Amino acid sequence: MKLIFISGPSGSGKTTLSNQILVKIKNGIVLSTDNYYKTGLISKVLSKFVQGYFDRSLSFNYKLFKKDFAFIIKNRISIQERSYNFKKKTIKNLLNEKNNIKFLIVEGIFAKDFANNIYSKNVFLLELKINKNDCMRRVINRDSKERGKEKKQAKNDFLKSWDIYIKRSKNKNKKRNINEILITKGTNIDLIIKKIFNYSS
Image (cartoon, rainbow, N blue to C red; front, side, top):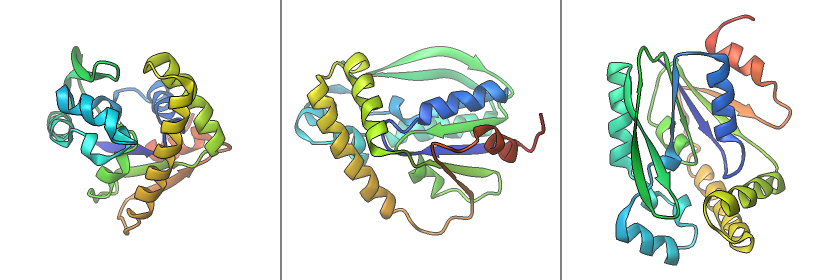
């Protein structure tokens, strides 16, 4: 099974790129780290008082994510998908069975953390390098519509998350035995997909 990790700062287009790949190549599935944040009272409190909470590892439910990740790798099927509600700080489990999975995409700000610990020629790390202002515009628009934030708060949260991501990226520069591909605004995505899946249109 091919594993594709898509990393990048908030608003860089990780979800969009994941969907582009799914449209081109069938029998794939996406695990978004955005759907694996912690829930309950502690999460509600910390998200109010810890600046950049959702960009810090303390917010992430690694145990739940690893459980779903391992199940898909072992069985090549998925029975359900998770959906995180940022307003209520809850996770909804949705029945969505998929069989004969041939590739798994892990996308989100924590994706590189997992890629760092996997060594295989069938693993690809796609890292998005997108202009900071472009990312900020996307995040402000998304967070005001989907996460119930005022635009000023969304902007402040983005600026903090950008700094956190850049700092975390610098700390993850150890050598990896995987295929790393840099994605910029001008990158031809079709060529990248062909390279990963070794197909010709």
